[in-house]
Amino acid sequence: MKLLIKQGRVVDPANGIDAVMDILVDNGKIAKVAKSISEKAEVVDARNLIVAPGLIDMHAHLREPGREDKETIATATRAAARGGFTTVLGMPNTNPVIDDQAAVEFVLSKARKEGVVNVYTTGAATKNQQGKELAEMWELRNAGAVAISDDGNTIPTASLMRKVLEYARMYRLPYLSHAEDPALSEGGAMHEGYVSTELGLQGRPSVAEDVIVAREILLAKYTQGRVHFCHGSTQGAVELVKQAKKAGISVTMETCPHYFSLTDEAVRGYNQNAKVSPPLRSKEHVEAIKKGLKDDVIDVIATDHAPHLLVEKYVEFDNAASGMVGLETAVPLVMNNLVHAGVLTISQAIAKMTINPARILGIPKGTLSVGADADITIIDPNREETIDPKQFESKGRNTPFAGMTLKGVPVMTIVAGKAVMRERRVVG
Ligand code: DOR
Ligand code: ZN
Image (cartoon, rainbow, N blue to C red; front, side, top):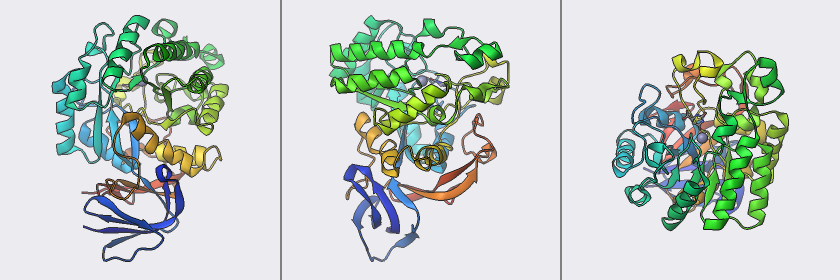
């Protein structure tokens, strides 16, 4: 039952560690971290590899209950394991919506039975995510929800948003905001700009995101509630969050690999796999997102893993479903486009995928401290791989990254001391 991970580059930002070390795992927990450990155990040779706390994806669409044709908790968690994630947070826009105790309990019990990695869930902010009546947050929290969100939708009015934040604050739950003004982005299929004009597609302006980010910041200040911005994609959002943090307002921000890896140019050819909400933006926004990551205005990298059926994607661009799968491409995109590209240090990148989301959600994860759950991700920073959707564990194949060769892939995923992925294959 013992595992000895030898001579890896241990990167544990929560403890300020970035050094070559050994880690001993015993009985599902981290037992010892030291320069050199000798112990009778299964040995993992981690020379030239990065040994990180198990990665956390705080934004994944698991699709169960209701859309098991797109994804299940079993397949999503296998995808997570293959992608190097040991913990995922599911979003509540399922069918039925996760807006009551029964739905939260269903997800958590399914996850215990069929999940390959740790699963947490959000609860909806409003009943059926309709933006009309508040969901029973106390009930959601007591059933185990760790955050509140209407992701996919923006809360329609400032007055309802105020109430959401007042209740969420009482129950110490962060609110995860999908910030897109529905009236400003109505009818749009991609980022509003040069490319949308050329393609003759109606645009969703970046200001649609900025307007709601500004609203949530003002309401967070007024209510003392806690707002986390999902999938930030605009220069304006980064600037507003930067100012809000300076002013001591309780806000945090995430972005996703597609917002620092692609521009709206990816939509050319009416590529439905590049359709996502919020949309891929133009170059100046992508540069601002990278700068926001570098300056730690953006705290978290999450995937917004959004599996869809091919038949929902391969229709006219306007009618195609929004979203892309992300669990199995995130680490290579982070390594290739941020770490090897010199935007983030490895320690900064790992922090945004481990301890930062853990702190925002208040979950006991994201570190390699002695006594912590032995959730560990081992990454080969130099291994190259070509993204091949046929290899995905996810049911979703909707990715704009197919065929790209990227450097830096997860090679082992360990959950509670047990390997669930070895050498790119899910095991056990
Ligand atoms: O593109 C998206 N797809 N954005 C969201 O916010 C929701 C997601 C989904 O559920 O498919
Ligand atoms: Zn969203």
